[in-house]
Length: 167
Length: 285
Image (cartoon, rainbow over all chains, first blue to last red; front, side, top):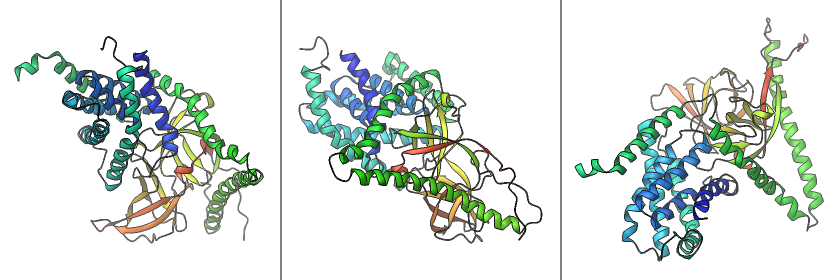
């Protein structure tokens, strides 16, 4: 059941991002629910598992978009790896850890996207419009992270996302 | 350091990064066809996205059921539909009018008008799930005759072109996407051949390659030039909001407000074919 939910979560996130959230975007910006889930997964698991799951989620997004396949997979994978590396040193019961984690992950993911794009394609030109998008997305992600972290925390402790064999 | 080289995870990570970069490079350029896996993934979303889009479109209608405004709402919908139709016709007529004036001045009339489009109506069912690409998904795919590269318009003007197609849906790259470029001219004077490019912002386009001597000015209407093989000539792109010189001083750059409100886009038309109008004759004055 846990595996099924973990597979369905990114699928559902893409559906919500491409419909409800994009129809009601704020200043043309939609939240990155995939990144939010990936951050939470990395926080509650190891860096290796987190980066693997993030790579899968990013790949699904890339395959849906059909362009630059591997770009989101790689940026999300690397972001989750960094988040996963620090997860052992943070107090996950505190909601601010999840929220701050999403904020940092948004910045890291944007940075990786820029670096990979500039390195491989030289297509993304940093302009003020893009920086606004990142800023709005960071705020949007942080806001949606609050209820989602509560759900994720409860689910991973005593709900559907609880790791089998965990006490 | 050597401990790192002995780690299986390190080598796996390196392999994944290399493979990703190779695949990224291979899929960065325009592909003729998307893979079977991509088609399957997209088509799994189509029914749900179509449902969500219908729900959104009908939301106003549902709320109006409980109010006296229902009749008024229907009237508005009807008038909006008529208005869209008229706007589309008006766009064509504007072109005919200007073309007619030009042709009357010419001795040798070359029939270059290609405004006879085969239009396939389609509904917008989804937008880009991330903020880096400006694209939409429509509910018409290869099964309905949509092909990659076909131009997409709305009654107000140019929307973009089909980027990739699955069985029951197609992804349309909007002209506001950073990778899009359209050959354009000023409708009134026809004197400037520039390139309109997307900025990744749904409210703004930029026209480049405008010679310094161009008479382009604010409020000029910009239309497709037809020089590219993709877009037919005469499709409304937008209106000039600002003109400024480029740093080198040899060229001008103009900011364009798109004719289409991409945030309110619900229905579009795919141009599945366009041909010269036959039998179009100009009477002698």
